[in-house]
Image 1 (cartoon, rainbow, N blue to C red):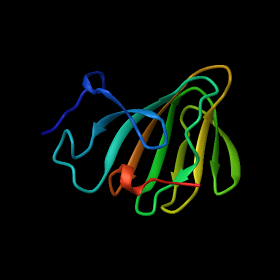
Image 2: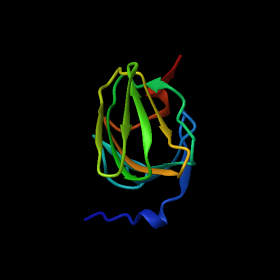
Image 3: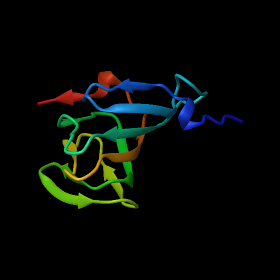
Image 4: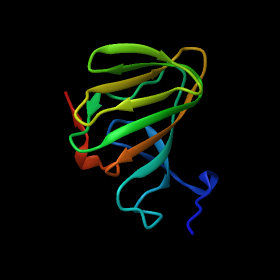
Length: 119
């Protein structure tokens, strides 16, 4: 059994500039087909717009509100919202001005810097 407490995971910076803590991936568990991370953005902070050729992503908003953009479509998201980001879809998330944003990110296949592409 593998149990990784979030509080014990050290933050890393992804290729798009987000600060994440890997909860479960191949660096800290016997994971082969997916990854799970917690991400945070400061108030009004945003990821760099990008896409992944291989990875399908799921975001789950824990705290704060944001604007999610997927392939040019904008939508407000808030705690409790789950977001599907298909592989190959351009995307960006921006925290609202009022508070920081905290969300979970699941990638299948697992997140990698090499699978992150920018404009």
